[in-house]
Length: 322
Ligand code: HEC
Ligand code: HEC
Ligand code: HEC
Ligand code: HEC
Ligand code: HEC
Ligand code: HEC
Ligand code: HEC
Ligand code: HEC
Ligand code: HEC
Ligand code: HEC
Image (cartoon, rainbow, N blue to C red):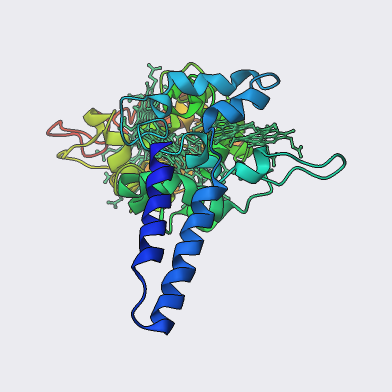
């Protein structure tokens, strides 16, 4: 453990160097003692010591050596040269891994996830030591940060593959807290998240975003256009609610109605449009009985005439019919 030796010798050097002012000397001595204590509180055997006890009963533990965190050639990784190995994340572990008198509890060590004893801000700080750069900037003040969600509620460090980094597996961890969202994706018409074609991260930035709802783009529509670019326009004849917000008519996660519509047409359309626009609109069954039903009802669906519900580029497409 080269790193620890050098911290120690630095501390000794400091102690040796203080002779001038007594108050100053005292402060420096204290600092040196602290540094020594700190250095000593990390285990001397590093990962070897931890694994000696732990590999026997925790199966996925060793997977970490196949992840970027276990890469000995990356000087920034916990297992890079001069790094603290397991203790880079779990914190000083000398006391925890040391001798314990029979019947005494083993001193605790930092552990991860919502169920762990370690307070979540302290857990996250361990990760942010190294990930402050790009993750931390988004994270601070995000919906997940202010609700004290732990990095480890989503991420796993020990399995060979962190499920978060794969669209096909990330949703499971999200559903643990967002059960209502899972219910939407189970509905008959939904974005193919279950099929692994679309992931939460196609639309959301879980670490934080400038947009509402942690969206990847500044608005709902801009988010949708990343895949449905043909709906962007500009069009000669626009349909106002489409320009405003796709979720006026669609549930972005999933719905019971075809095409993820929030309601079934004509009810959807009638939630904004009164029948008065049409020359003759027999909406009640009396009209049917008298045989005077107009084609507006018999066709059953506004869409059979107004096919261009997202807008039209046809010169005479004002009524969204062509
Ligand atoms: C002498 C054996 C031994 C050594 C060495 C050891 N541990 Fe442990 N560790 C244990 C035991 C036993 C437990 C279960 C403790 C308990 O339930 O109180 C444990 C628990 C843990 C936990 C879970 C803590 C919790 O609160 O649930 C973590 C994380 C951990 N050890 C990490 C490490 C790391 C990292 C090292 C190396 C710095 C290490 N251990 C060294 C025996 C050891
Ligand atoms: C000692 C520094 C260090 C600590 C502490 C650390 N990481 Fe990392 N982490 C890295 C490095 C280095 C990489 C590789 C980055 C790269 O390749 O650009 C990495 C990569 C990752 C990745 C991407 C992994 C992949 O397979 O691509 C995730 C996710 C991650 N870290 C999460 C965490 C979490 C969560 C914690 C806290 C439990 C944590 N890290 C603690 C240094 C660290
Ligand atoms: C709500 C779930 C969630 C939380 C909480 C979370 N992450 Fe992530 N993280 C993800 C997902 C999902 C990805 C994959 C991003 C992608 O594919 O676009 C990711 C990717 C990463 C990566 C690697 C990819 C990259 O962005 O460079 C790192 C490193 C990382 N997270 C670190 C952290 C740290 C550190 C924390 C805690 C401060 C944290 N994450 C909290 C879900 C989360
Ligand atoms: C990149 C940060 C990181 C490093 C490095 C790391 N761990 Fe972990 N460890 C975690 C996280 C996060 C968890 C929570 C479970 C998970 O994500 O897989 C965990 C869980 C554990 C547990 C399980 C505790 C429990 O509740 O059952 C043990 C034991 C453990 N780690 C030991 C080790 C040992 C031994 C090493 C070194 C070989 C090590 N860890 C290196 C982040 C790390
Ligand atoms: C440990 C619990 C937990 C996990 C895991 C989790 N979240 Fe969250 N999430 C929350 C909490 C708490 C909030 C804030 C309260 C709320 O809006 O429900 C939140 C809010 C959100 C929001 C809404 C933000 C807003 O401004 O309205 C989105 C989007 C979100 N999470 C997406 C995700 C995604 C995607 C994942 C998985 C990658 C995920 N969450 C995993 C707890 C979690
Ligand atoms: C096709 C894009 C898309 C996908 C994929 C997607 N979301 Fe969303 N999500 C949205 C939009 C749009 C909103 C509404 C945001 C707003 O207006 O605030 C939203 C809102 C949310 C909210 C807050 C409101 C609510 O319904 O509770 C959560 C939490 C959430 N999404 C989680 C998830 C999770 C978890 C996944 C993956 C399983 C996911 N989303 C996948 C687009 C998407
Ligand atoms: C990551 C790409 C992606 C993003 C972003 C995206 N979608 Fe989709 N969308 C898809 C895919 C893939 C399908 C399925 C196409 C298929 O099954 O043929 C789809 C299908 C749909 C459907 C038709 C469903 C059906 O049953 O016919 C609607 C409506 C839809 N998306 C609306 C939206 C809305 C609204 C947004 C923005 C909140 C959005 N999409 C964002 C990829 C995306
Ligand atoms: C006024 C209501 C309304 C709004 C707002 C709306 N849509 Fe639609 N959308 C519909 C209806 C109705 C259908 C079903 C069309 C059909 O069955 O022919 C549909 C179908 C779709 C489909 C699948 C069929 C196709 O045309 O590709 C996609 C994708 C889609 N909408 C995307 C979007 C996007 C993206 C937005 C926002 C820019 C949006 N919609 C806004 C009503 C709306
Ligand atoms: C969220 C409210 C809303 C919903 C839902 C909605 N519309 Fe509209 N629609 C509008 C608004 C606002 C206008 C613009 C009215 C104006 O310019 O006077 C409009 C315009 C139209 C026009 C063009 C009228 C003209 O000649 O200027 C047609 C046709 C139309 N809608 C049909 C539909 C159909 C069909 C549906 C159902 C698929 C529907 N609308 C759903 C709000 C809505
Ligand atoms: C049989 C075909 C047909 C059906 C079905 C139909 N419409 Fe129309 N709609 C028309 C025609 C034709 C016009 C007049 C177009 C024009 O003036 O150029 C029109 C005009 C409109 C207008 C514009 C009225 C205005 O003030 O200028 C709206 C809004 C509208 N329809 C909504 C709906 C809604 C909502 C439904 C379903 C409840 C519906 N339409 C069903 C054919 C139809």
